[in-house]
Length: 333
Image (tube, rainbow, N blue to C red):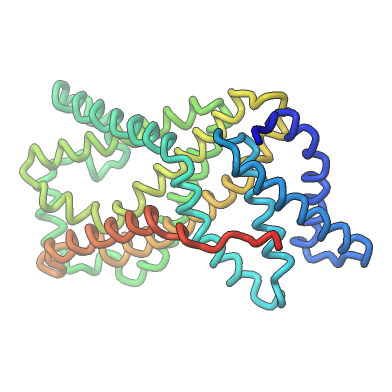
């Protein structure tokens, strides 16, 4: 049977909201009375039934992601026998939820990649036609010199330029990169314009640096320098851009008669999942950049660093494409 999706959503929204209010109390550690627990169970069964009806429609309803999240959270609360390991349980949920969220918005991710790589082409083009623009394009002073001279200095170092400070440097990289990623996502509040500008800017920097080193004949050094951490760090920034464009799209486009608050609630859980997943990726990227990327030949062969980077990128792609596809759905029964 084909539903009037707008009328169905409007009619069922109050019970979904009541169910979510009880869920928020449980997730905060509150205890429900017997009457509240019975009501929670009834609302869960209704939400699960509504989810099944929405999934049976030919077109994907706008409320579907919100209701999927609601039922999944309710299922988790009803079947968690113990609260002794909330962090472990949350981490397990994140492992499956993050790639599913990215796959659900693959179309937006393509736009993010297009903006980023358009910026890379722009940065490379500007530096190619106007080498004097290098001080404007390069964000760090150590990138302003001749690439071959820097490579010679790095290769001549004994590998202890960060001796005693690797953990501090790793912590700095984690916090700095996470701050950039969160800013990229948060600028979605500018209807996605700020997110797009920041993506384009970061792409322009990468394109300019790549052209500078390639033109100097230092492509192998560049690849071995950037790939170990960049194979994780750059996708994390792209996922932050995905969150920003998702937020901007939600602000810009109405969904039937849903209010702005209702529209934002439908993506709330997805934004939280994206932020958490990005933070985990950037923590790992910071560790790799501090403890591996800063070492060059002859201490660490470039071939080993490049192979490590490609392996990471392959594993990340496999994780995003396949993880969580066969995870059991919550059983309304």
